[in-house]
Amino acid sequence: MNTKITYLIIRLGVGASMFGHGLVRLPKLHAFSEWMLKSFEKAMLPEMMVLPFSYVLPIAEFAFGIFLILGFLTRISAIAASVLMILLIFGTTLIENWGALTPQFLHLGFFAYLIQHIDKNRFSIDYSLKK
Image 1 (cartoon, rainbow, N blue to C red):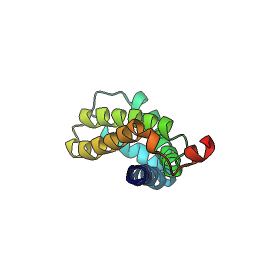
Image 2: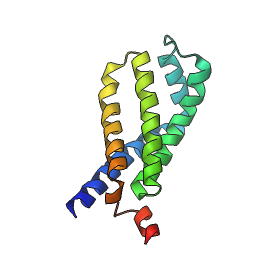
Image 3: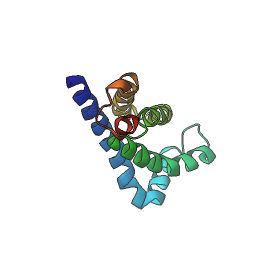
Image 4: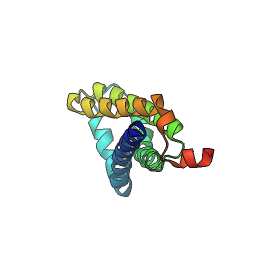
């Protein structure tokens, strides 16, 4: 039972983090996009790649956060959030923002845990739908 509770705690924690990141950015989506473009202006990524990502990122964070909090499509959400985090890690290295790497790697580790131990996802919508 403890591993199922541990799974719930990690799922809720990382879900709340993703949800919160998206939630605070959505109302100021344009300003967030401008900030991101400014952050990447000296990076080797062209603006035509950064611009769409800057608008998709908060929406994806918000959606994955809600899904993880609810335990709905948990495995798919954790995999998609992992891909998103890997993209963020890559971008972070391009702008040499070394301080942001640690939290990004922590998120990635939590997503990997959720994927690896999906069988412990007892307190979730996914589990309720399987019954």
